[in-house]
Length: 78
Image 1 (cartoon, rainbow, N blue to C red):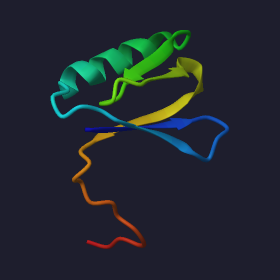
Image 2: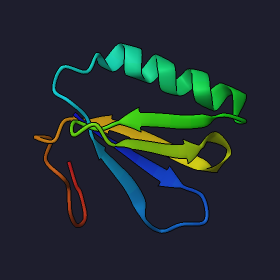
Image 3: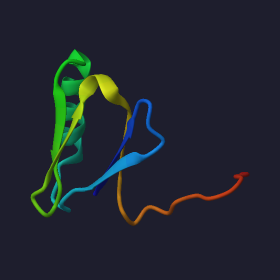
């Protein structure tokens, strides 16, 4: 499970590779809870046990997906 976080005023994204056993609904609920207050810190722990913290006020977006999802490159049509 991958979590990609966009941060305001930065062109780079933060990629966090989560464990395969992550409950997506619970993760999404926890992220929404932190971002709703916009004063806390969004903390995520990756599969190696490293913790990543991003101030909620600086989060532009959060994308939750599977590492096996294909990344689209170029122009899309139907």
